[in-house]
Every structure is written in C-alpha cells, then in structure tokens.
Image 1: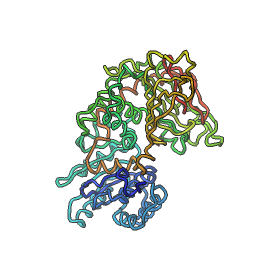
Image 2: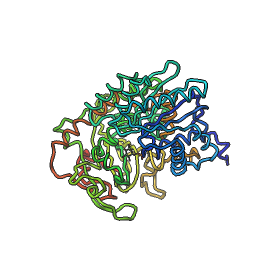
Image 3: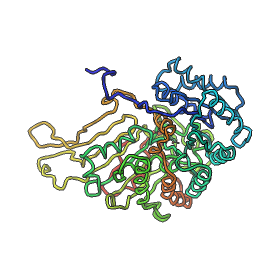
Image 4: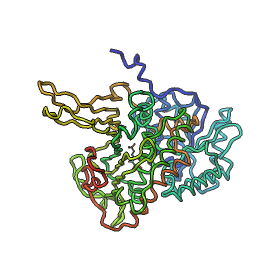
Length: 507
Ligand code: BG6
C-alpha cells in the first residue's frame, strides 16, 4: 500500500508565491482571532504556505505589552491548532508578532499602527503588502475603514493593501448598502475581501468540482430530472456564550443569508467560463437574482421559524433558548429557520429548493441532497419489490465529508426485490489527509489577492434582497413561535412548507 508520503493525493495547501505581507488583525484578542485566525495562521506557517516574510500586528483595546500578546497567541495556538504545534515554527512565527493597543475610533492608535507597519518595512528593507482583517463587532467595520482612509492606510504606492471583512454585512439590505458604500468610498472593490467561511471549506468547493469536472451529473442537473433539493445546516450546539450577538441576529441572518445561499448558488449556477473571481461570482449573482423573494403575504407558506425548548443533547439535559445566559426575556429570535425557494430560470423553474438550519438539533450536519424524479415505470412492482426510492445525490460538507449516491439495487435472492444502497466517496479515505480549515485557505487567498472565494458587493446585496421580505413578514406576525425540543430534528411545522411527496431527510 502507498504510504502517506508517496500518495500524490495527500497534498494540502500548495506553496503558492505570496508577496511579503504584514497582516493586521483588528479585534486581535477576540474569540474569532483566538479560536480560528491565530491557529489558521500557525497552520499556514507549519505548511510553509505563509509568505517567506510575514509579520502580524494585533489591534485591540486591552493595554498589554507585545510579550503578553505573544504569550496569549502561543497558548491559543497550542489549544486550537488542528495539528500539534512545532515549537520551532511557532517561535519563528511569534517573533514577528506585535500588539498595538487602542480603540477603533482613536486616531492616535492608527498613527501607532502606521509606525509599527513602517518599522517592519524599514527593518525588512522592503515594502510589505498590507492586509487588514476586521475581526470585530460589525458596528466597527465602517469606523475602521474610514479611519484607515483618514490616516492614509488604505493605499500604498509600492505594495498592495487589502481589507478582509467578517460577516455580518449589515442586518438588512439597507444597512448592507450603507456599509458597502462606506467601504467603497475608501477602497476599491478589488481590495475588499468579504468572508463567508463556508466558501473556504474544501467540500463546498467540491460542489463545483463535482458538477463541472464530471460528465455524469451536468446532463441531469435540471428541472427535467431533479425533483427537489434540500440544503441542511444543522448544529447540535446551542447559542453558548454568544447570545448577545445571536439574539439580534437569529438563524435566518446568521446562516441562511450567507452560508446557505452560497451553497444554493454554487449548486444552481451555470458553468462559469473560467474559475476567475469575477466569472464565478457573476454566475452566482445570476442565480441569486433568479430567486423570487417571497412577498410578505407568501412568507407563512414558504418559511418556518422556531425556537428550541429544553431537551437533551449528548445525553444531558439542556435548557431551552429562553433560559440560556443573556437571552432577553420573551425573545422571539428564531434558532431554526426553514425556507422553500425556487430559482426562476430555464434550468430550475418549478424545482423546490428547501433550506433548513438550526441550533440544538440532533447532530451537526451540513449537506446538500439532490433528489431525482422517480423512474417513469416500475416494472418490478408486481414481484414484491420493496423500498424503491428515487435516486439521491448527497454532498456532505461536514462532518463526514464526502459524496454519496443512493441507487436501487437488487437484494440477492430469487425474487426481483429492490432496495436503496449507497455508493460513497469519503474525503478521509480517498485523500488520506485532513482538509485544511476554511480560514487557512481564506487568509492565504486574501493575502494573494484572489477573491474567488469571497463575496462581491452585488452578491451580498442580492442575498439580502431574498432575506429582507422574510424578516418583514416575520416581524408582522405575532402568533406564538413554534418550539422544538433541544436534540430533536426541528419543529413539526417544518413539514408544512414541503410540496406533496417531499420529505425532510433525518437529521
Ligand atoms: C457562523 C455562525 O457563521 O457559522 C455560527 O455565526 C455558526 O452561529 C457557524 O455556528 C457554523 O460554522 P461551521 O463551520 O461550524 O459549520
């Protein structure tokens, strides 16, 4: 058997050339920086995928010296890195880490930041590219970008300046537009990298590979053969310590507006002419534009929202959403949302696309299931056939990454009896390697200036155009919110949006 070293399929992130870069993380002591960004940067260093010369500056409010920040970074990398850190790689990475304390509206902080950036250039004898990563609460996005502009940090004559913005981009279409305008009054669109971390997941990108690198699927990828599509992003965890943010967001804004609509767009888009950032994003935007946003009147028929009540998770009793820390009394924020959408174009007209997401469901699973139409005539029926089901193609984004096709097969024996069986491809077995974390790929791409896996301004706005009327419809409806027990598959009411003969897959 081939060893891991010999297997050409085990390659991780390639060592693509990246110009020397100084990465600045605003919100450097925040949860995202600790759990995701710093470990991702370490893993890039470990793979030799960071630029040869790389510096990191963290900006945050706490007034601590560089040394304390470096110690904190070491600790969180040791805790959250997907591979055990190599002390030599970690020491080398931390050598070039600096910390700039200050609030995001404080002009003197930007001056100190500028000095720190220039010092790296001076010591390095070259002008580093600059990447500013806004890992802060959303209210600071436009403040920070504005200040970068005022302090001349939005451009550099001799190097590239890029800004990475986390979600959420606004909480509705009007706010998203306002923020986009504020950002684009200081930066060019090609300097802006709006993160949707689902696009950094290998399995999400594999949707494109599956569709466009195989002759098998594309001929049937349309309304003539596909009966319906189901996209599920279920989580077993509850709101945890994030109620402050989550209660103002809810499942629709938190996951549907961004991650789930991206999955839908990748699944439904036309083949792009090339895989360049704009060709791919042009096709995704066309799909989003082809989705008929429900009118406020259609909202009850096309959507369901719900909140988790107390129940069981991992064998333990867990509280309902309203009893979680920091959730306001009587909150009507949904922790589950399900939608029936349609893409009104020649390829997809009439095919329901169901989306469903929720916290505290039975398990963590993100998948796309494409169900084909039933065969036109079932000749086996008279002979006692059992369990003939329409074919399903299931793309599992997480946790058991892979693709499965359910096909009808003959049960061994004298009778012509049929049952569904699975043909399966699993990443873990096929590639013998652990997929890089989404943030590793995205940080690297942002530093390289490749925006293919980031959302463009018109894409974000097209997403909000679908979500806005649902939010309005829900705001006008004060009937009691359906509940589902923690640890279940969600509320019964979710069945109400399904067309006849369609079923949710078990979570
Ligand atoms: C984030 C949401 O964007 O995605 C979280 O804000 C959610 O609420 C998370 O838990 C899910 O991401 P993943 O990668 O764990 O599926």
